[in-house]
Length: 92
Image 1 (cartoon, rainbow, N blue to C red):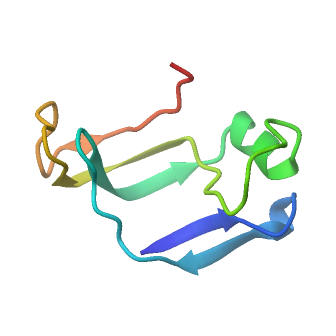
Image 2 (cartoon, rainbow, N blue to C red):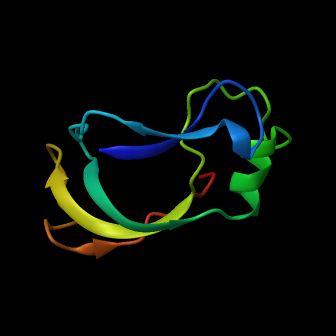
Image 3 (tube, rainbow, N blue to C red):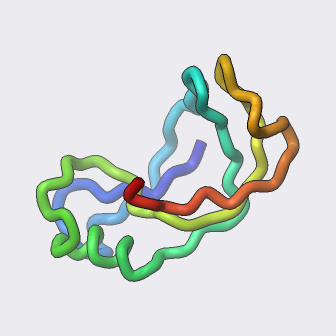
């Protein structure tokens, strides 16, 4: 899969496109094929190193997006494969 990863420092110059293996969802998780993502103010803060500067790299600095559920982990019953979803970052 394609991912945009922050690694090697802070700032947009350190966001790199990489290829990764497609993960498998764990218990209670879903795997989403992302169709669109956006960088919000929190994401820019993480990229620039002033929002949670102690985060360990590499990390994917995206909180908001939209996609489709493509796999379900064990004990996942709230979603169905093929459903369109919008995962949104929340602290709780």
